[in-house]
Image (cartoon, rainbow, N blue to C red; front, side, top):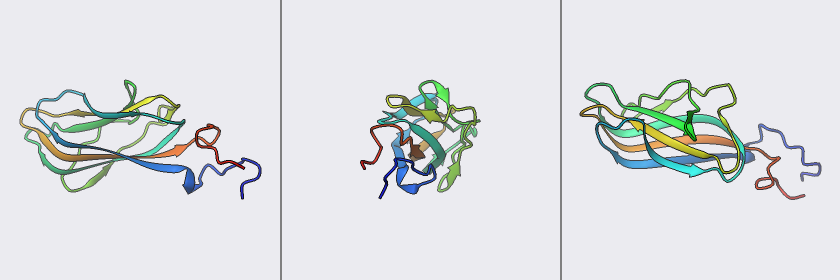
Length: 138
């Protein structure tokens, strides 16, 4: 029982996995938003992983970015590899923190001849339990 509303920030029950998927991404895209959502509560992005079933990457130009509004939460874009989970590196300047209503989105760049099939971008987020939307009742 929680009786004082002091919740350990490492508690796994306040983490959520959000996966954004896109079936096909064509060639010659330049930082194009593929999927996004509005955060229903405040929190922190803990990790970002990218997986693609197939990639036709003729010029090694396929890149994935995750942004809060127009600002990347990553230190650099992720170069997806077909059939593998590739982790991104989060910035540590507070960009990975978000508030309720912030837009979080997946942006993709592909070169000439590059196509991505079945892209999945997984975010693990930690909810801010000070936010009424996620605070457990006592």
